[in-house]
Length: 367
Image 1 (cartoon, rainbow, N blue to C red):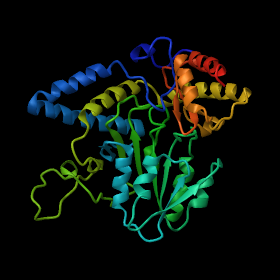
Image 2 (cartoon, rainbow, N blue to C red):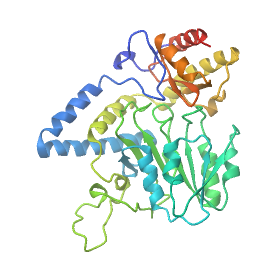
Image 3 (cartoon, one colour):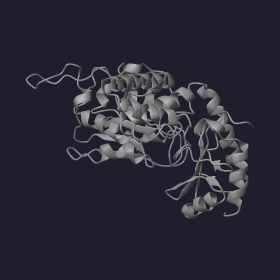
Image 4 (cartoon, rainbow, N blue to C red):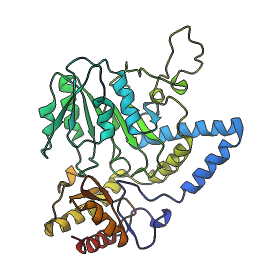
């Protein structure tokens, strides 16, 4: 099996099985030029600022192509939690309102809502592994169904079509975090009312910028209730009249976008645009399926569903010794990821079956 991406395009240490895309991917070498362009533009006054603004618009267009939406639906925040917070602040919450979540949902998706005080919002948590488990948490009190498309903890992929129908049945918003999916799975972001994604994992960017999506067709009257200079409409000045906001998803971007990170994101999106996401999905799921099969035959407890329709690019195993296992693997030149008493292996286009074999050989020495 040959890699889909040329490993020479990445800063991959020789002899290492870099199987931790769910934590951090290896950096593209092309990012060197992107970073240099940024510092050059930052140093050239108004013309450099015009270049920075063009980079923002190019990144919006690139993300729109990747997520199959319109550029005006794309904005930027510093991280997923900021984006979720802006949505949470905008809702006219009532006593008794609830949100539906999986019990193991990522904190950035839940905490901005869970910590609200006036009124406090009930968290209705689905537990277990049944694909339809969130339905038991949804009723007339549900204002938001909040979910990751792919779980950071287990690698499970959620059925967004079913969740969209569930949200519509009670008039709730569907809020989706695509962080563990965007960059290797085909994304149709329009299934959500709002969606967000960090850019430093499978999208091959760096920290500092996250993507924000506002489905303006589904939620045409939505408006944030907090703002900064950048999220105000062009030409806004003075405070004698109500402040006017940007008419599109740049209303999420309250201050200067993280221009340096956006230059890198543009570099990453340019690279990913060479590939059909269906091909990337097939490549990484060939690897995840191989690792899942081998681990199952070895009777190693798996957290990740074996059905390819229900998992993404990660394989997770539960172990109270997860930290020690990851350290052992690192010494044997396998880069994996630790956290919450599980070991996570995540593949991208630069990985091959050799990485699966190297991972298994190193695992057998410590399990």
